[in-house]
Amino acid sequence: MHEFSVVQSLMELIEKYAEENKAKRVVKVIIRVGILSGIEPHLLELAFNTFKEGTIAEGALLVIERENLKVKCQECGAEGEKDELNTLCPFCGSLNTNIIAGQEMLLKSLELECEDET
Ligand SMILES: [Zn+2]
Image 1 (spheres, rainbow, N blue to C red):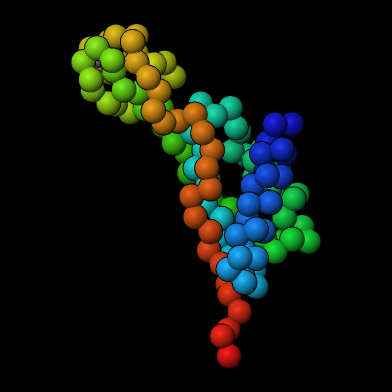
Image 2: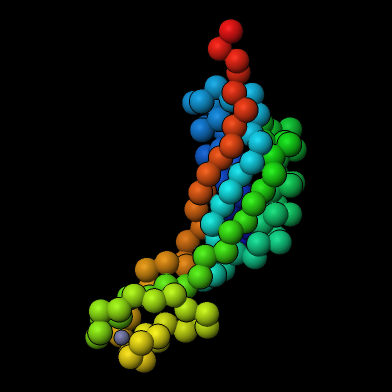
């Protein structure tokens, strides 16, 4: 499953970050999942819950934010967010557009509980 390898590298990132910040544990993980990324949020959650066992993120809450498809039109220059899954310009209907958001998955924020400085 694609989601498992995604979560595996996500976990590595989380552990590295937590270590760098001397965190005791990870409280919350917020990720953004683009609608075109091919990632199923519920599978991602499943994978996350499997992988977090025994890690610093064991008690972490996973929050998944969906990111809509966004295109920039090469004809009229407009940028727009789309509800439908096509890359037509929402303003002039041109097909000559670039996708500027909605294809990726990224770690948006991490909430850590850190060691007391005492
Ligand atoms: Zn346009």
